[in-house]
Length: 115
Length: 110
Image 1 (tube, rainbow over the protein chains, first blue to last red):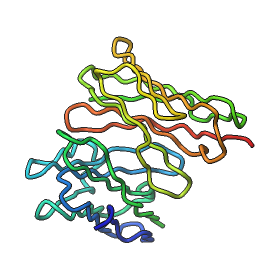
Image 2 (cartoon, rainbow over the protein chains, first blue to last red):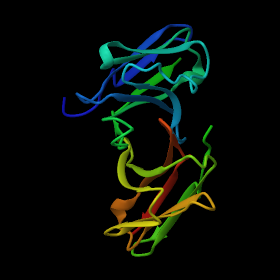
Image 3 (tube, each protein chain N blue to C red):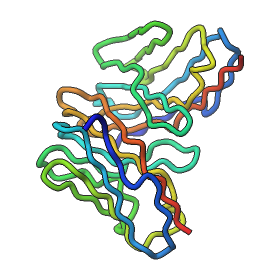
């Protein structure tokens, strides 16, 4: 695709429900990141995928959060039993390879609202 | 892990004046320092970057400096224009992980 695509753009859910957020990186990009941006705050690192290597999950805030990347392309971030404090914009970014090209291309994000 | 601190959190300047945003990092292994600009309601986009083997880089009205010894780097915007108004994020790459600062909201007053 022309850029990093995220869906849905907006998600409203009730507390306790599970949600899945999708990221479709730029074709050929081997590195994929998930960040969380709360209102007026910075970019909080969640998880990182690089090719077929084991992901760096060090930023996931709790075991309710998980992510996978199938076939080295599309990634899904899952939040189980959502809480109000999970409300934020979830941004995905991809890069050709951090070993050779560090520029991150961001998607437009998913605005998650937990009621 | 890497910790990136960014100051100030907000900055207002008159159009035409200069703006400076400063960041510090903790991990001496960090070797790449990008700056991203995020306009209201839009995604962050890279505006300039610098590698650890360079002390300064300039691109038209924006420049970035890096002091490896002190572990700090700065963004300089000269002759600011209203369209420079946005949130600016510094970041540091150590290994495979990009860590961002908390952002600076820049307002350029016409």
